Amino acid sequence: MSPVIGAVLLLAIVVAIGAIAAASITQLGQSETREVAPQASLSLENDGGDYVIIHEGGQSLDMSEISVQGVSEFDEAETLTANDELRIQPTADTVRVVWDSGGQHTATLATLDVRPIDPYSSGAGSGGDDGDGGDGDGGGPTAPSGISVGMDSFDPPSGDCNDLVTNNGKLVVIDEVYACDLYSVDPVLIEDEGGIIGDVTVKDTLDVQEGFVDGELTDISGELTLANATITGPIAGSSDVVVEHSVLQDTLETPGAVTIETAVVSEVDSQSAVSVVDGAVDGDVGSQWGAISLDASEVEGEVVTNNDVTVLDSEVDEAIDAGGGSITVEAATVNGSLSAESAVDVTDGSAIHGTITTPWAPVTITDSTLVGAVETDADLTVERSEITGDLNQTSWSTVYLTDTTLSGAIRPGPGDTELTGSDVSGHVYASDGWKITCAGDASIHDTDCGSYAPP
Image (tube, rainbow, N blue to C red; front, top):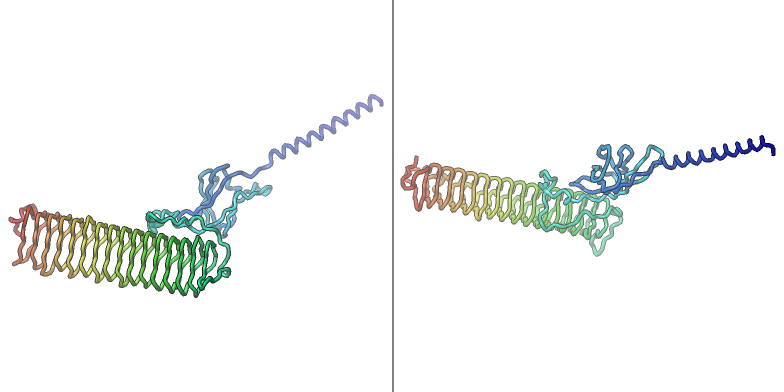
C-alpha cells in the first residue's frame, strides 16, 4: 500500500471515530437534559366543608405545569411547596394531580379519593365554633367532649341504591357507601361507617349508628335514632327523634319529642318536648307546645316554647320565651331576656343579661346576677343577689329584698316593700297607704332605710 493511500485511510478512520463520538455525546446530553417529573407527597383533606390538597413534603411544584383533574375549579397559585394548601371543588370521586412538561412528558403525581365531608374538621362548631354552626366564625358548632365519631375514614362510594338488599324486613347499609337518593317503605339501618351520599326518604323508622347521610332526611315516618352519626342536610321527621354523640349540620324539624345527648345540632324545631344534655345547638331551640330542658349545654340562639323551660348549668346566647309556661334558670347564663306568663326562678349563681318579664306570676332571684330590669304584677323576691336595673311591680303584691344590692329603683304598685340588709341605689316609690319595712343594715338612695322618705 502506498503512503498516500495509507494516509487517506487513516484520515477516514479518524473522521468516522469523531462522528461516532459526537453522536454519542449529543445523545448523552439529550438524556441528561430530559425533564423528570417532580417528586412530592400530596394528600386530600376536608377543611370545614371544603376540600384542600396539602403538600406534605418533597419538591416544590410549578403550578404552570400542574393540572388537577376531577374538579370544577381550584385556587390559583404560582407554586405549591411543603405545607401549602390548594383549595378545590371536586366533581368526581377521584382527583388526579398531573404534571406536564409542556407537551413532551406527563406524569400523574397523585391520585386522591374524595371522601364525605367530616363536620368535626370545622371545629364543630358553632359554628363554629365558634361553633356554629352556624353562624360562628369557626364554621360550625363546637363538639362537646365525648363525641368521637371519627368520620374522616369513610370509604368512597361502592355502588348505588339498586345494590341494597332487605334483611329481615329491614334495608341495611353496613360498612359500605352508596351514592344515590334512597327511598324505602321498610325500616332502614345504616351502621359501621356505612353511608348514603344523597337524600333519604323512609316511610318507617331510620336508625343510623356510626354512619352518615350526606344529604337530606325527608319524610321520616317512624322514629329516628342517630348514634355516632353525621347528617349534613336538613331533617324532617314525623315522630320522636333521639340524637346521641352525633353532628347534625342543618335543621332538625319534627312534631315528635326530641332528645339530644352529647351532640352538635344546627337548629331544633319541635311540637313536643325537647331535651338537650351536654349538647351544642348552633341556632334556636323551639317547641310549639312541649317543655324544653337544657342541661350542661349551649344554645347560640333563642329558646322559644309555650311550656316550661328549664336551664341547668348551661348558656343561652339569646332570649328565652316560655309563653304560658314557667322558666327555671339554675347555675346558668342567659345573654338575653326572660319572658313567661308563669313563675320565673333564677338561682344558684346564674347570670341574666336582659329583662325579666312576667305579667301575673311571681319572680324569685336567689344568689344570682341580673343585668336588666324586672317587670311583674306578682310578688318579687330577691335574696343575696346583685341587680342592675329597676324592679317594677304594678299589682297588689310585695317586693322583698334580702342581702341584695340594687343599682336601680323600686317601683312597687299598690303594695309593700320589705328590705332586709339590702342596699338600693335608686329611690323606692311607695303609693299612699302602703309602707316600706326595713330590717338589718338597709339603705335607700344613700339614706338609712328607717329615715328614708319616698319621693
